[in-house]
Length: 69
Image (cartoon, rainbow, N blue to C red):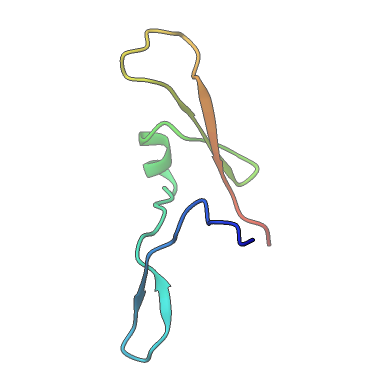
């Protein structure tokens, strides 16, 4: 039995035949991060996510973007 994939990453092919993802994740930097309501702590960018219709004071979830060196 073969398991089905939960998702598929669409790729594009360069002129040299190298494949790469067709989409990318935008990661803000510097003042741009602050303007888009990210908090930067120890090199990790953190933002809250909530529904536009939700009047709650606190986010429903968080997203954290970072990298390991």
